[in-house]
Length: 398
Image 1 (tube, rainbow, N blue to C red):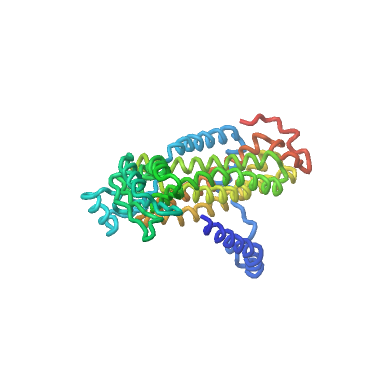
Image 2: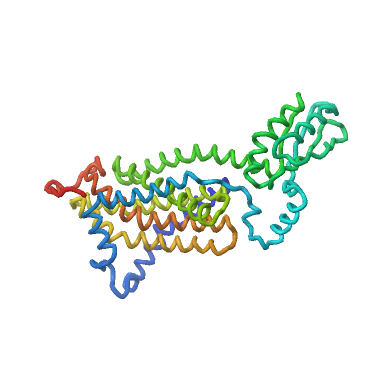
């Protein structure tokens, strides 16, 4: 993840520069033919989004409630997410590596594929009886199938013991065995020595632990950063809160949809451990982008003097098609990953596609404008409209 972040930052920075310089220049040069055959400023009053805009403006409470219930129900399923670290199991069953593992597991403990190493190092020669105690204790651990005799260095100050687990070295049970059983026993068996547990299973257990720790820090930091940026852009207090909550609920709904599809319908034991963090990055970042696109248009119309209902209707009519088109293109691009045959890419492609569609076609063009109508001037406080357009609006929202 550390190597992914700088690349994404550089890519987004380049796209930002391009959008602010190259694209406007191209539009200026090709202005006469860019919007052929309708020309710039053409609006279709009878478009689908014009109808959606009128519906949301008339029934904002019904719209927000229906969408909120849908997203929350999906998000509830997200609590059933189970992580899998079985990178080998995500390969197609006909690949040589998977076939080799199946052949090995049929005759030997699955852990033979990648034994766990217990390293012991001391300042002086390690007593043989302590190494014997180590191997005996490890062999009695639940989840361990076999322990090889220790190999000792020429000076006797270091030794390594191979531990063969009973389950696949990539299975969640094996990661639990390392954290809960093997490491505690190994560290207690040789007093005064430095003991380390390594190997692929131990590495994945450390990755799991680090991800859990990082997520506890990443989520709050992201919330604060996004809220500050949205507050500075929209010049409001409550509007950014609405946008942030809607984005995070959409992320939860996306994860819930993945759980329904892959764990319940397709029967997968779990979803790749890296999928939620990548989904989080895409859904929160892209969902916030679409929210900004819609909210800024609502705010612009509201500040110009339009009533909250009219501001929401115009924003959906004019910016809804843009958000939906951009979202559908991105969703279809990621959906192509479902054709790769690799489970982790299938899960990632489906997840980003679902999240982007929810953000661009449901949350941004309908939920956010509906919330702005329901909360009226409070949504944009302390920003005030140029004229008291909503003073005479007596119709009850519903």
